[in-house]
Amino acid sequence: MHPLIAIPTSLALIYRAYSHKSLTPLGILAAALTALIHALHPSPLPFALLGVFFLAGTAVTKVKHDVKASLTQSSGGAAGGEGARTSVQVLANSGVASVLVLVGVWRGWARGKGEGEWECWGYGGDVVLVGIICNYAAVAADTFSSELGILSKTKPRLLTSLNLREVPPGTNGGVTLVGTGAGFAGALIIALISVVLIPFCGLDDLVQRTELGSKSSLDGGSGWTWREKGMLMLAITALGGLGSLLDSALGGWLQESVVDARTGKIIEGIGGKKVCSLSCVIGSGVLRMRADGM
Image (tube, rainbow, N blue to C red; front, side, top):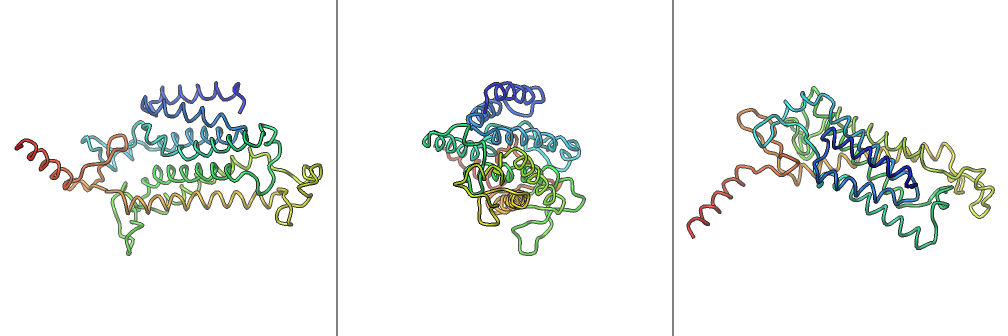
């Protein structure tokens, strides 16, 4: 991506994160490094997806923030709600994409190709770029479903329970129809941006590049028509939404949700940190007693 576009855009996004307190200081540092890596890719798409995800994710986080804060409880005793995102959360969302960007840059360098490679993208082209798109479709879906699903008027259902039992809002593994729909909408936004920015090879381009043929991909060639673009959008949206559901399922299996016995609300760790449950507190107390007795 051209430095004259990447540098001022990165500075603007960093300033916005700082002024709106969207990220912690280490989160801002991680975001700056992520933006630098994404800017190395010859295609503007990875950098654009990073920016769109940050702005869209921040926007849905602010939607009815006071209402969402009242639905959960912070481990510090205050109201819940998403605070400034940490470096761990930044890397969790964009770390895989950053690695894929570096792989794409290395592959282009090894082939001796630069930005000219992106003048026209034939069907079945760079698989790494598809991986970057799917990464942001999945994390966008997860963010949208988490931030908007908690506002559902119906209680979440635990995805990992056989009877899909009702659970308090904010429970790991809990899903609602509103949240699921919002997740697919987030993935669709990423799909739309991708289709707009990818320099697809049309049939006219392929006529000039006879080695690729002059047929569309569905007709056995390598060209893109609106049929193929539509199928790509549907695939990205579906994979992103399903990725969000998989994340919920893994959260239900692997992450612990702690409920305040007095309020019935889920207790959230500050900055996304793990909340210490009763067994954890007792265990820590036993260890401290053993340490004091030694």
